[in-house]
Image (cartoon, rainbow, N blue to C red; front, side):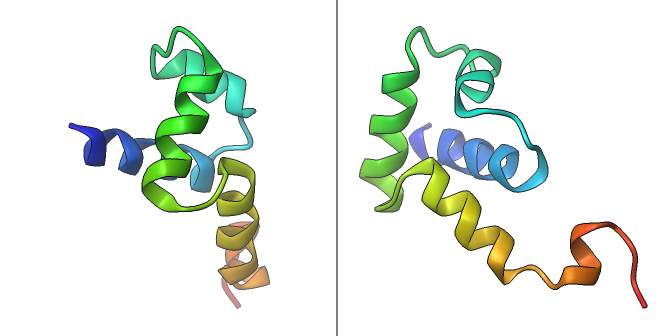
Length: 68
């Protein structure tokens, strides 16, 4: 169950510009701190760090949806 939740959080961090608070509401967390705790404990970094790392790995032409 936790791994499925982590995968869903990762997908939202990768595919949206939603705030962490918006992601926590979308995933029915009663408190954003719960999302932070679960994510950090399982991934080893914060949600913000993960999003930055993921975006740095993307090629510039992939970020805007165009491919040259």
